[in-house]
Length: 308
Ligand SMILES: Nc1ncnc2c1ncn2[C@@H]1O[C@H](COP(=O)(O)OP(=O)(O)OP(=O)(O)O)[C@@H](O)[C@H]1O
Ligand SMILES: [Mg+2]
Image (cartoon, rainbow, N blue to C red):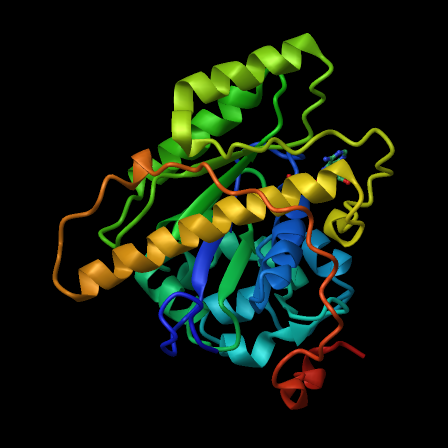
């Protein structure tokens, strides 16, 4: 895989999608941003770090023999565990049932961000890995945050939304590593903007976090039946348009991440104040769904990873 930014072979960018609070559309955001990045020409993987395996199941993987747990503990390489999905250009690193017990294992307790990053980036199969974190951030998720290039926090604008956001930002601050990092990004999700109290909460979040908040809020879809549909595939919906706009903001952040990494490689150690990066973007109309192209390297579909 070649980088869209440098045309050099490179490892994927790691984007941790997390919030200490549950049910704020982390998984929905991962899946939709993955679809959005594919329409922008990228190959993407969704790494399912939730033992409930919602992202894996949305992407059509109901059971897998190896997945996140085996990769983070070094039992297998990420290459071996990737599975293709029904969505062209999207791979999944599936969650396996063993993951929920992993937090108490000595080798997981001793896991550090550097080792985790090395294991997750040992692939050239994709440009970006979107990491779907579980709610209630434990040891594994904290290491994911420390290892990632970018942290994106979906926030549903409800009364207690700020609690989850602030806890998540505290974790980011506590594990800020030496690798070049952008400030965390915030995506407002499931926003019923007809409700004045919701609008007030959004204004407050924008006031508190400024340019860290993506300009587009994902609207609440009252017709959602709890299926976390891949909204991007229905391009005429307001949610699809909003996720495509969020994708543009993410693409810009990816370029900032690559540029920061390149500066560091060249020995410019000063980290730029990316926190102030402008997020105003030329918004394009929704892109039609990607033409179904066979994912690259189809011959290595890791069929042996599908449980019987
Ligand atoms: N924009 C939206 N409008 C309406 N419903 C939505 C929207 N986005 C997500 N949902 C629904 O909200 C529920 C929670 O979404 P999702 O599973 O993505 O959240 P999560 O943060 O990953 O949850 P968890 O913390 O349990 O992992 C799902 O039923 C999903 O279908
Ligand atoms: Mg989830």
